[in-house]
Length: 302
Image: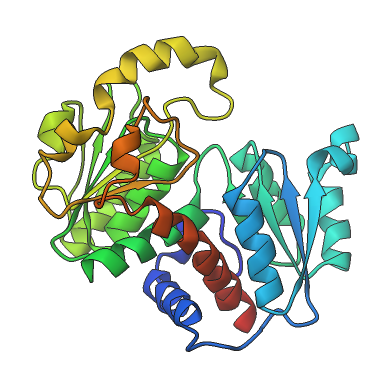
């Protein structure tokens, strides 16, 4: 795996990366494959967890991170992506980019000669998903016979999580209102991959039906960056899809709750659930650091 734009890029390496993440977190792995390497971090969208986890992680692996706001690059003045890619490939050893459009990252990869890692696009968020899988593995031991329910908007996180669930053999149900389903192409691919791992991938509009026998309840904001003009409509449509104590009680007794953050308390999730004993949200957030490091380690150790 030279680049990570989609979970599909890591299809055959998911478990290997999770093992590295566990080793880095426990301190069993101490190598620093980024020593004397410079990693550019391009941000077209604001960030807390992605920026801090990558910046700290790059340092801990021996490298030097360079924060590059898109507003400070010539991209902001119309320089073609292919020119930027060619030039940065001469200066840097790798790039992490948090982008608005997935196709822009694909173009960056096309003209770069160094590894590219997607820190988020409008289509997928693979780095988040490795942290999610690590968290589920820590709480549940493995993925076999486990059911995760993603509740809310079928967004970029949901898309990547569908592929990941299929690859590791975990059942997944997307509970969403009609018209807010995940990417159709990714959903179809995930169902095909699930057949190989004997897992089940499906969409369910009835949230109460979806959460039955769930081991993991997962949600995200109802209004993603770029959808602000739909805020009032989305809040109305998604109101029945809130994770609260009543909904949580319909899952398994030992079900955990996850959220990729930032959260809007009182909308997609209640404040009491976020800090309840069943919340894995804060461990999930910490695992962004270990997951980002594992991705970098896996790519640069090669």
